[in-house]
Image 1 (spheres, rainbow, N blue to C red):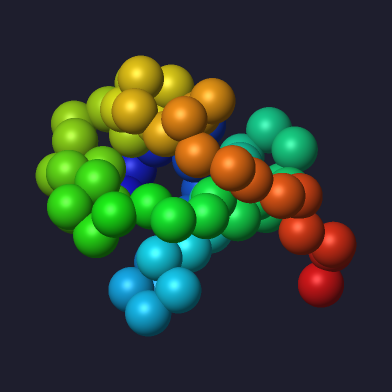
Image 2: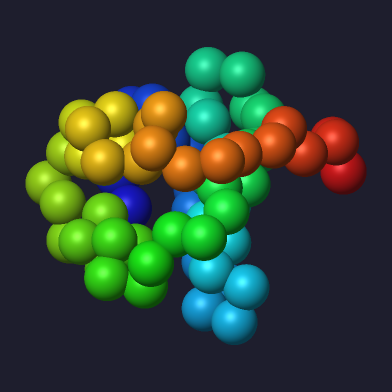
Length: 68
């Protein structure tokens, strides 16, 4: 998943939670109630950052997760 802005993602289909780790900050945000179809399209997108900004950011409720 090469991206200059997104380091890693993880998706839990049971809770529909999308976890996104960002390159610049290293922080993890969990996005709630993300449909599996949205996650699949995100993974297929050529530009993860552009897809994230257009279809996930400011569209789903999110929370900053504490550092591990």
